[in-house]
Image (cartoon, rainbow, N blue to C red; front, side):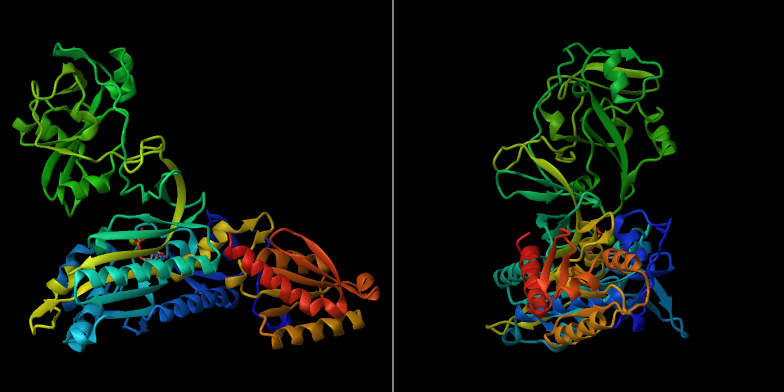
Length: 576
Ligand code: ATP
Ligand code: MG
């Protein structure tokens, strides 16, 4: 491509609405254009990167034996009603009606549609296993679309679905996809980690997320530096040090005016926050729960939701709390809570504590010396604490660590969740009807592009991994009016193209500064710079975007040098 023929508009100013590096740089380098909240045009440079991501994914999926299909964006409500997700998906699912008032979803994911295909197409174990995938736009009306294409309302996903005759075979298919996702992330050049994850709205029994490591990531990963344990904090388990919890044996009600927080309470009774227990009130599927945990720890609502099998979970409102407990927010405690019709759960951190300081279920009152068994009895002990760095690894006991990540892919072992609810069956070896055992596997194609930038940039712009750079090489004749130099630029441009290198020739008649700045901002991995003085000495410069290193090479050896440099860089990103 010649720059003068290309649609490339870089911006001088950083757009104000962008919060994250990748969002800023994608707008500034002219990769995307905002159309509406969470909805973006991909301009030629951006689309080139997306296409390269798609190629890598497609190659790896085909290698893994999966077959590509294309399902419609529009899917009839009836299919979603079969699994109950028409109601469960809530507002995130975009819905429309046709002229006859038939309802449709704009596909946020495609389990229902693929299961329908398979139940109509496959009736014998002989046709199994199959793994079907598509690369398709998805629609999700995110509460807060943000960070550009990272959390968009319309985005591209590769989604795959495996169907097997039994659990064991299905585990194999899951494993193959797990390995495939590892390969895709490696080929792109990511520093990443596969972690245990919660199954969320998709459901199923086990799942792993592929996290690109970046300080700007929205996800928190808990990992063990000593063994292979790694999990999303939403799912993480760990061993919490048994500290605190000695508030004496004498139960006493104490007047605690204006005391609202755990810290204030601990200071007031001259104890430590870990000697206190807080009780948080939730509404889960219409019932009120009091969840008691050590005062110095935070709750993990996803673990809580899973522990009680709730579909809908939220904090109780101040009004609901007052009307049930007869005390304002901040004074809930375990004593007599059950008598008020509230289900009492206690976290494991409280289970073995000797005695505690707790809320008194009365404005401005707390209790000290509260003992489990003597003063209250819980309905259930649960593990709902948010694990943090410093807690013990439940596998090997080492101290866990924390890091931030961006989720780019998610693999789920689904089992028969969808095949049962949609009555999708086949005949097994004995001629008996069986439900398909399924897995589903999503990878965010457009999010990958943003994540790659989040991991590779500097103050001048993007530093593309070669695998997904819009162009691998930019050729910069510093001054196009210098004839010999320009002719050489044209020559090496054609030669590189012939060798299959993706190359752009900056044939603009503008200042060298502008050319260098643009090339750095867009982040082409390699520049070939043809300046008059060097060229008269028979030399050109090869400059690497990643580390700024410059090689001065003989112009007649430049072609091979560029090709070698590209190959070295590819390896470099691979071994990252
Ligand atoms: P998140 O927790 O980030 O909302 P999710 O768990 O809803 O993700 P999945 O349903 O597992 O995501 O979708 C598979 C992949 O699709 C994700 O790993 C991510 O890369 C991508 N993805 C999900 N939501 C978005 C979005 N709003 N914009 C861009 N990509 C997305
Ligand atoms: Mg989501």
